[in-house]
Length: 218
Ligand SMILES: C[S@@+](CC[C@H](N)C(=O)[O-])C[C@H]1O[C@@H](n2cnc3c(N)ncnc32)[C@H](O)[C@@H]1O
Image (tube, rainbow, N blue to C red):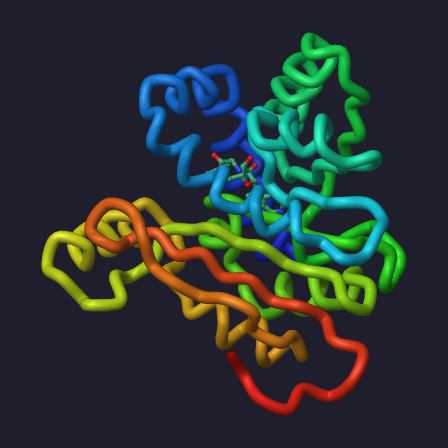
């Protein structure tokens, strides 16, 4: 990692460390946020391969707690040690194993093909290097494994309120991306992609690592 990369990573890490003690309270005050994150669960419940489920950017571990209740092995990887401390407290408080790793989405410390699923909620838009992160996700997925991603997005119908909301996220440093396109560039098949939520400004995208070359998108 060069100096400018590490400086920007350190800045993000400090920002999320500062947010960590308050983040879960914010989620409780905004129950719709938690409902948006839970849209990944029915997809993960449909997993047809077995193995660890990785959540990248679990923050304070609200969703990770649910994943740990559902799957034999659920692992959370986050850049922020402050967020990991919060997640550890939440998991231990629920009597669940706290499988947590400090790391960066662009350099996942997991073997190729080792994960049955990777999920991210409102985390991908925070990564400055979207394609590099998606290539890492594709690398760690096993054949038939799923990536299930929910994030803020430009609305599909480009309505004015949703576009203004997307611009606001960008002003706060987030990146509004076409995750399906990045998944395809990383060699994944698209299983599902749709906008929902307030002003159609939340998007769920599901990709799969195929065992054979893709023939047609869905
Ligand atoms: C906006 S919070 C989302 C938390 C939670 N998933 C949710 O849905 O509310 C983004 C999380 O991603 C983490 N994060 C940001 N950049 C990261 C990176 N490059 N690698 C791993 N985690 C990162 C942050 O530390 C933070 O916990």
